[in-house]
Amino acid sequence: MPQLHEKTDLRIGDVAARAGVSPRALRYYEEERLLTARRTPSGQRVYGEGAVDRVRLIQQLYAAGLPSRSILTLLPCVDSGIATEEMLEVLVTERERISNSMRELEQARSQLDRIISVTRESNRQDALG
Image (cartoon, rainbow, N blue to C red):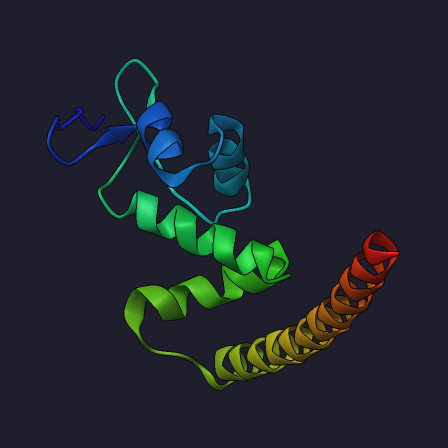
């Protein structure tokens, strides 16, 4: 059984706090095989130094709309820097989907900017009377 190494291993609460997620999220990531933890002799989860960055990456990928299955497919590429043709295809497809979403969000923001401008001007006119 692995022992806790004070300088390199982090307990679940430490990783959660540093990454800005709940311990429950970390357990879920472990269930989904997105994150691995070792266990101390007493059964507590401990994570290596890279866990916080890994969790932040997982959070970003989830926020971008990637499902667990896609993230799981991509993580070996992140770890090794090597991608199979299938991984590259997933990466390119997801990047294209995110780019399209960004364009749509920019269009929505432009519409909101226009509406804000029109309503502010209208409110000024009403105030002047």
